[in-house]
Image (cartoon, rainbow, N blue to C red; front, side, top):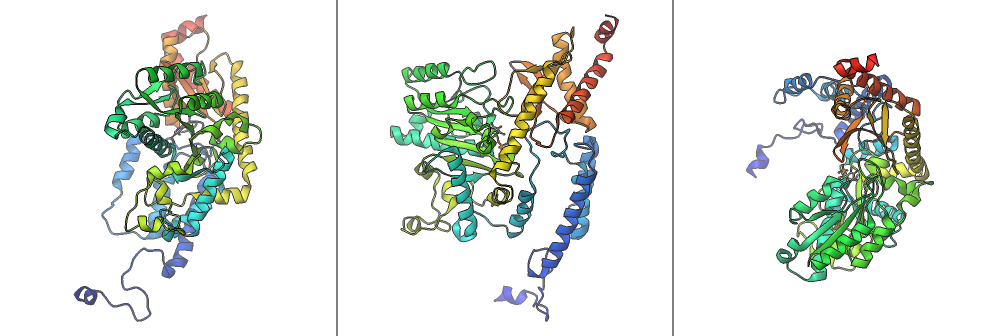
Length: 508
Ligand SMILES: *Cc1c(COP(=O)(O)O)cnc(C)c1O
């Protein structure tokens, strides 16, 4: 009673006694006003952005961030958001700009961005049905829709924060299956477990193995062909050798679209090997998942329907704002290994009842979880799946065109081919010493990055440094890319001009 009495009484007009910044009935008008301001500011940025970034100096950014007084009196909503517009939006990297060609970041579709505002305001958590109601049903429908696209007849799964988390959960389920099948205690079994994948697999695979307590050398690298696709004969040999050594293949991880080269492992032959050895097959389609919607390239994923689990990142090739990913499994029963019953959330007694409420927390490594599914939902309803698939096709087509362009380029060497939308190349004019070329690639990337005018990525393949374009913007044209390639060339030439080597070249 004492604490109740100590509270200030509500004002006579019924408004709250304590001034808060909460989104409630009282602030509904202010909410509309504030979002109007934010969308006007962002729209103006979109209209006026001239480069992927303004190329701000990092020391200056550090200063700007430090200078904000987080302990001072509040400045009010409008001023705080205006300040954020200047600090954040004014210094951001813009993925929709046609000269942004670096990482696996996609431009985002309008219905998803609008849905993001809706789900943020309502703040649903899709862990239990009693917190989410229809949102859980919508997420489940989208998971089943994705499973259907994969070709799982009775698949199930859950939305996750990204491919990293999806891969972790896939391997967690694979470890659980190994425990079930052998009946061995985890302490005895885990040291014998191995994961087979290629050098090109995403690093989250080996990190997941570590998190799951597997041996430091548990991830075996299966040799790959020249373009990074798993060598299936070598996979069979590795599986046979494991059996002979008394070890157990916990999972084979095939990649459907490697992060660097966008190549897809030979899924049908890998599925044969997995079946022959009774091994869990996980297909990491974080990047290639968008092909599920393609009208011309879906066949590249043939065999994916024979996987036990699949990672799909909608925030890479379905043009969704981060986060939006899913782990999908072929047998819904496999997800049971994730289930934990908490009396306050999803009690076991209720779960056992015939008409149990659907609680997605039973299938997730997260508890409180965003309703990210709403974004994909509105995207599909607005555009339809074919339009998304066509956008994926457009970036894959562009990669082919860029590659053709580079084939004839005297200064830029292109590496191999892709199944998706990356282009790996390096600035290497005739007569340039390879060692010098190795030095130049990261320098070129860095100079472009600091200028803000164009952004390309870099990577190292078999010890050789390369530059990389990740094409994920279906509105980017061959001309746009050619302009960035010209910048790469000019930057490389500029660097060479500063060396004696360039002088020798010039006198040739
Ligand atoms: C990007 C990527 C991941 C990681 O996904 P996040 O969403 O960044 O966590 C995993 N696997 C592959 C093949 C990827 O390209």
